[in-house]
Length: 209
Image (cartoon, rainbow, N blue to C red; front, side, top):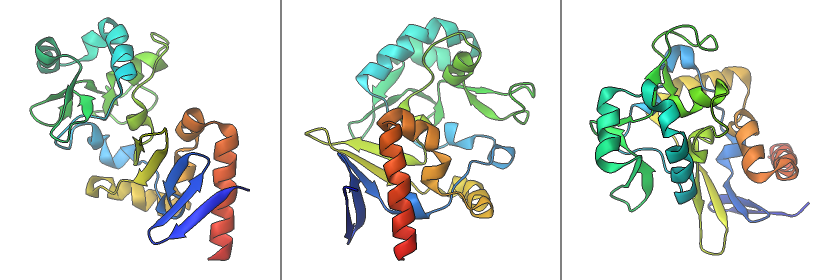
């Protein structure tokens, strides 16, 4: 097995991916019954997106337009689906300094989600079979944040946020680590072989500790 572990800071490497070791040890599992998807409407910037993802969003915009609020539609009309934030990163456009423009709300009949729970209009359309693209990778991978470095190396960090305390509590209750909760998006992003190796590395590290 080809991986490296640096103890200070605790970073491991699998292939061309650097991974913060707390992704393997910290517990996490979204609890929508309690948080109602608040991560879609909190924060001071939109979700990180790539140029390619902006293109994907623009292609499905007409399909999701009706699920967006009038305020969100006005923002998109004015500045587009994305903008460059204060740190120089491309992010989805937001309303009133916080809400993602693609936020909509469950009416109590969408996959059993609690009424009033925040939804992503992009993902809603995808799950309804109306589009073939779901949502930005940064959303699918949260609470992991990914950064691509020069040369193609990717860094993965666990982003701690106070509003996700219920997800931490549920993860601890279930004994589910961050990487286990994100099995599907991690596999989609890096491949099954890579994810299987990540699981083996996690098992080895926990056995050794």
